[in-house]
Amino acid sequence: MGLFTDTYKNLLIVQYSDKPKAQAHIKLIIGELEKVYQFANQFDTAFDVDLAVGKQLDIIGKIVGINRIVPFAVPKNYFGFDGHEHSFPMNDKFKNVVSYPMKSKFEIPFTSGELNDLDYRFYIKAKIVKNYAKATMIDKDNLSLQNAVDYLFNNKSYLTDAKNMSINLYIGNDFDFSKLQFIKQLDIIPRPQAVKIYYISYVEKHTFGFYEHNTGFGDKFDDKDDETYFANKILE
Picture 1 (spheres, one colour):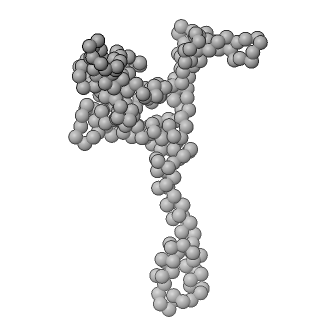
Picture 2 (cartoon, one colour):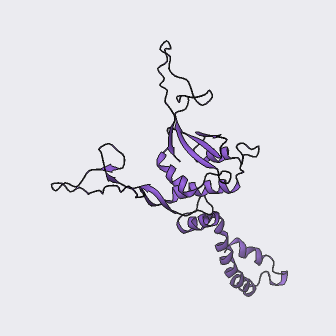
Picture 3 (cartoon, one colour):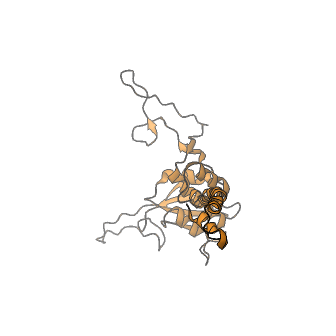
């Protein structure tokens, strides 16, 4: 017998508190209500974004405004030169090799992708961050654009205002760039209305540029072996 039922049994007036029929009556009525209570009590766990799975996670995603199916997020594979990440050879009649098509000039090189629970949970949280973020670069309440990208890129990215209705987002070179297309398609980076984002990769303290996040060119009289790279625009 559960705590819920016991609580109501203890409310019986004295003359009925030790009567088996009275106790059985309470157990019969309150027992059904306890099942409803226990069922409702499961919602806290089932719809906790950190614990939810499957359909429950889909419902949370619908509430915050993000779908598990992401259009144009997964690169297609084509025939191409050896060594390119998404290029493959033609079929060989002597080998059981899948034949890949040539890329059409006007073809969109991405197809839809479905997020697993782990990735979906991450992007749901990112969407929640966007829903609360303010359109400011820095904010004392930690609700700024920079705070949002800190979550997305594990504190290895930073924003600069280009002063021309665009923002440059610099992303550490060790980030998994295959996620960028998902981030773009899901539109989960907050920004002011009509402001464009340019995605740029950099190597912390090894990218040529101004002081703070970057460094200068090498010096032949310097004993340091550190290499310096130009930042690379990876997505618009």
